[in-house]
Length: 313
Image (cartoon, rainbow, N blue to C red; front, side, top):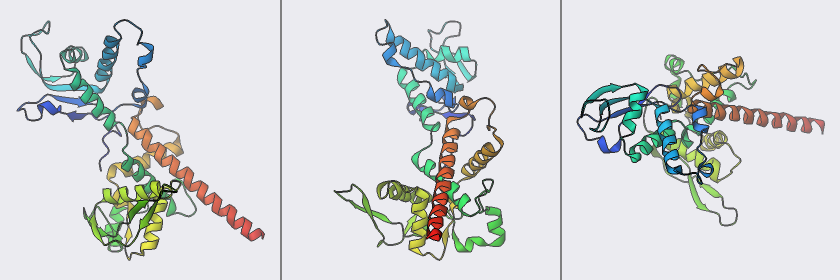
């Protein structure tokens, strides 16, 4: 599971209609910032204006220019003024020339590339849940709740200490034999699902584990965070080996977790500029991490209060 939009590194994209070509046109796309994601053209304000369709199309073109850093293997049409007929440019990075080129592009290709940019500028459901998981287990390992604590499972330390012998690690194996709980049929009265534990072991991937516990957390007890569902599962299953959460996450996830903690402690943003100039996917990841920290603090505070009431009696 790879994070493509946590930085402003450009990402190559080839339109579907050119993927079988010998020299396809390659668009180098930059993930959107928070500000670009929040810029929405309000079509209701221009619906009564003459040529409103042209205004809407112009806005789409401007959005395209903002996210497109360069284009490879560009062939201009005969009608392009100021250029030789059928001239091919290997690398096009001038914004004015990019604007000339997209004027000859079909609207469907512009839409396709803008949709792809939206896709890499937001977290998927599984990625969001994975940030919740790694945050919770990083905090859970230290009962004193030191916010600066990093993930306690270092892969290098694990190799030296041979701790992997007691853990299921998806970094060592792509698939692991586990008993993943299944959801039963939906209850007609409550609208929730029961969990079926009587299932056989099967080969599962990290994505399967995440998907399973996301469903459990959302469809059985909607108020239960994904990490608590996984924790209960590990307790009920009584596995000899525990499931390593660090092994579920790629390097990008762990790096972003460190950035979020540093940002919280030092009040600095990872990239130059204001909040609105940060990569949108990165800010969504920070939101998932901070929400989990807040939930963890609340659960811990509730436990302290309940213990205090018991002692008072």
